[in-house]
Image (tube, rainbow, N blue to C red; front, side, top):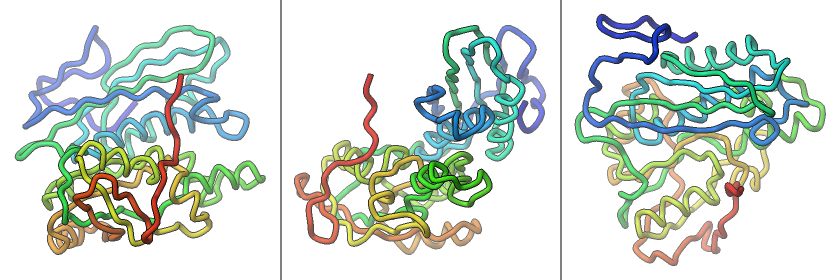
Length: 289
């Protein structure tokens, strides 16, 4: 149920626990939970899509740290009648796309369909990129145009097919693991994935770093609105603060990756949070119980 085979001395599925060879550098671990009806509307999308999104969203947290994905484990709670084969097909498709093996998991009967995905990665060398490292004068970048996922959800609600390009961006997002590693290799000082929207995630990065920001523009994906690009969320693009724009572009180009888009700069005044000279209020998805 995932790419690759265990290396010598490793064990994936089939025993009480998985066995991995030693990881290199810092070990990076993250867990995400995806719940049917909360994280994906199963009247519009499939159980397989839920499995795919759960894995891609968890792996995006590794991308945001610049980590190499080494393994993931999956815990599923499902009511009777759930199409578990379809769910696992979606999980496997996302794992294959990321080159990250599923090494174990658990299944329990429950009242609603929910997946908890734990991902394990490694950061050799200087270690992981945190959201707290941005410094005044750093340039800010995003790895691609924003708003595709939110636009895809809107279009699906309007009747667009599952193969619509924007709908695909919502139901089958890509964790930008190669881009995260490239940014780390280019000396990025801070980074986050835009899971909740630029309009709130950039504030979180600035809060953690004790800085402000001045955005010149927000790149809007074709078919999306400006508001979807700012607050839509679930694009899983990365926002990067880097001191050396030339180095960042060189590393991305050398690795065959799309060039990051410059959107502004980090400023010293922690109260200064602007877009085109106007205050950028916090807006995006906020987690509440």
